Image 1 (cartoon, rainbow, N blue to C red):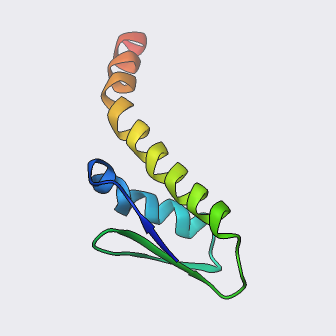
Image 2: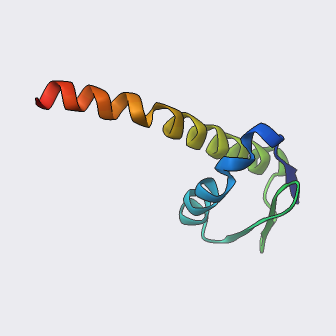
Length: 79
């Protein structure tokens, strides 16, 4: 199954793939030019799989964009 990822989110694919492969070891995830290809030995619900992949991408985006804020907060608290 091919899951297209919008180009503004493409920078977060690699990190999300690592998280997805750990969460779903029975599904093979592969980066493609337009997004992610997922293939499972047993049939998975395509809508659910698409939802999980997009959630992982967006979660990685939030993590990456808020990391400097969290680091600054910790520096202030631990100072």
